[in-house]
Image (tube, rainbow, N blue to C red; front, side, top):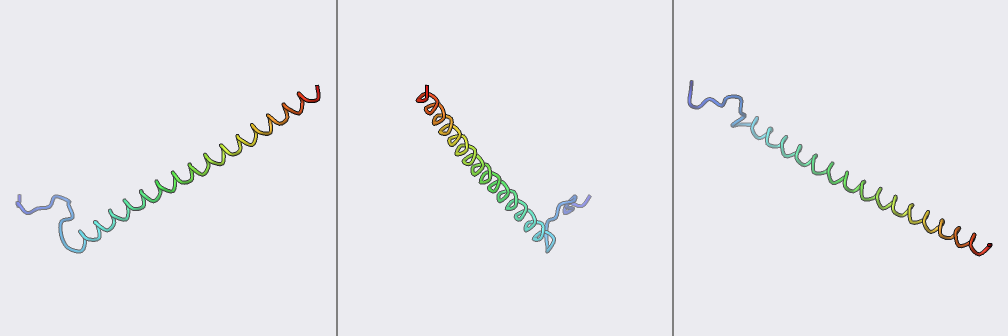
Length: 70
């Protein structure tokens, strides 16, 4: 075997640069998608909490109204 053999690795030239660019873009895509997922989760959580708070306020108002009628 030749000591300079790369054994399947992209080690030089334009192919290496393109491979590095591909890996960088893949990593960037993972980071963007992760950030987007967290953003959507936070927004959905805020919406759910706000909706729950509205229902709680509405339930409390109805309870008070019923108590005053009796």
